[in-house]
Length: 140
Ligand SMILES: *[C@@H]1O[C@H](CO)[C@@H](O)[C@H](O)[C@H]1NC(C)=O
Ligand SMILES: *[C@@H]1O[C@H](CO)[C@@H](O)[C@H](O)[C@H]1NC(C)=O
Ligand SMILES: *[C@@H]1O[C@H](CO)[C@@H](O)[C@H](O)[C@H]1NC(C)=O
Image (cartoon, rainbow, N blue to C red; front, side, top):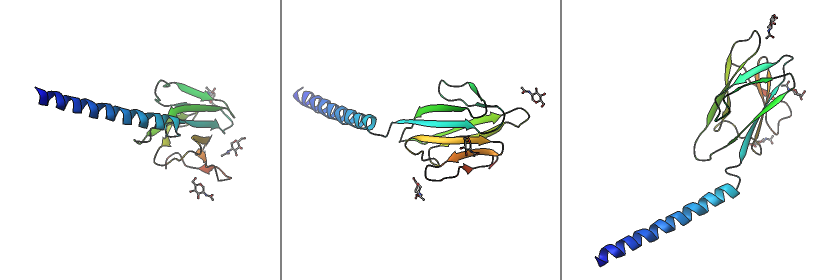
């Protein structure tokens, strides 16, 4: 009886210690930059509108961007797992182009902001220390 009591006391002690440590880690993660908002900015650099579509949390809509217009997706980047997220683009007379607009292993968004400018040939990424956008082909 006594032994059982001691054991369960120890278990309780270990459990509360574990919770304390976990809470501290969570507070550290939230107050640090690890769980900051990541923003994907997408701009229409064509002379006509386009529509993009992608399943993205509660945002599963179609977004039509006029020439020069931008749209911003906001999400939390979780440091412990990889994230891959694609969008489908099309406009009048084009194919449906699917592109991985965010890949946590590929993209290191400067200060949690990723910038894309969409042209006919494909998406162009603004890398913070490049002066020119880096353009990719749709089907690469
Ligand atoms: C897209 O448009 C912006 C604003 O006009 C311009 O600064 C940028 O160079 C353009 N990017 C491309 C890839 O054409
Ligand atoms: C798409 O292009 C065709 C041919 O130029 C035009 O007749 C039609 O109105 C356009 N549709 C839209 C939705 O802009
Ligand atoms: C640009 O930034 C990347 C990562 O932020 C860094 O690895 C690279 O050395 C930088 N290039 C220049 C020319 O500063």
